[in-house]
Length: 114
Length: 114
Image: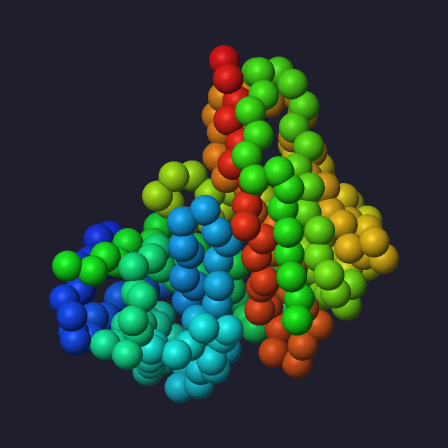
């Protein structure tokens, strides 16, 4: 079945450590997105990519980095510069970056500090 | 900057009652408005997408209306069932060169009691 796979489901980070969250899609979508969700709040956009080898900062990009070397993959690295990384991270994709296309979401990765 | 608000934050109704969920946004220059459902610990499922030129969209027991001039959208769920218990989020796609960038509300957590 087509869909978006995020891994791992749970992740723990030590002080000063970088961690990478995986997002893979087999929907043949051009656009991919990373969101952060804090308890009881909506989603905030971290980074998005409209096409392979291109990505743009969202509203809260500081302390995060991404790459888009393949159409189906959009990994997110939470760096040690992100001082409050504990959150639920959601990856999404859409057919393209033009509007009026619903976004499809993975099941998320919950990141906690050790 | 676009701000999206959902009131109430939580709602509890007996089974069979109709649900009315509200979403308001501050900037009426939107490309579309989307409603999502989120189950605990899961990603988002797209429910309805209303383009800026449309006044409403319907899918089964769900109906969403859009009044751009007043910055409001309402999601109606008819004859609620316990399986409708979830958090419902609305999001607006602002009119920007890079489309499909969503701004989310904080969500309404719904409990339908049998």
